[in-house]
Image (cartoon, rainbow, N blue to C red; front, side, top):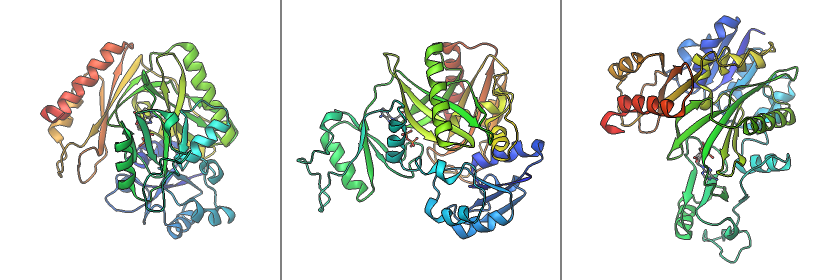
Length: 387
Ligand code: ADP
């Protein structure tokens, strides 16, 4: 297979284009704007919203298999295309249980995987007010409680940690008719993530489990490998196996987890695509997650996911102002750090919280305190007094 269509043309698709050439693969993207990061490096592009099925039908005429950069797709509209034998990898059936956070939680629970206690919030009266008498109200979840928009949340957009009923009520008012999920707040000791890939023939490879650090629900840093016991690592690998096999998944999947202070693992979220927590693989592993994804969806054997160094620290370069600056001087400074690799997504515009790039620093051996210091140093260069 030579041509892979990607629905989406942001930084994840851009990083896929970087891996394509060596595999003899050409990338065709469907993305809204000619200035989107992947466009310049793709062999071909269709400029259309990612949920436009007519554009996806056109995409199908220009490639052998279609894959996804993100999950904000219109699954219903793609079904007729799949019926016409257009090849989607992962299959639409593997995406279906994952696109809505409530459906995803139900799917994981029904598989017997550990998840926080949750339910869909249906205790809203026709006037839009909370019905406190409803048994569906989350008194048993305790406070704080976590509210999540069921669809299209990312980087903490659509995830709210609410400390009391008043905050819960006002957030609901604000969200209007947006369907939401409520779940218990997990006072986690650490957040973990793992990237796993499954091939067309059912082979599975799993990258080292990593520690992720979020601020205001946005990933800031990834420390590799996570400092966890072999038992916890084995449990997470078993979760990845169960999940990918059950979905009959093809491609790379990102799984985010909570680790509690009693050593309990809970799945927070599954993303049916390459993931921010796997960006370190570009510089630190034999096969990057982007190459791995292309290998899987184009029917090639999977590559070796092992680390080729003692560890790594990945720091996201998030926008902290509105500007058109390309931050060249700061990027140079970051490039000069020992064993650092700066990846800049070439976005035309910066705004607070927007992912503009990332830096990975390779380590000879992993020590949590050292990794943390390196991350702090990168952030002090990047954010300066804005941090
Ligand atoms: P998104 O899809 O926007 O990334 P997530 O569901 O992954 O949203 O949540 C983003 C972050 O919010 C998590 O990484 C975590 O830090 C925090 N969070 C989410 N759910 C919970 C929870 N149940 N308990 C505690 N923190 C949570």
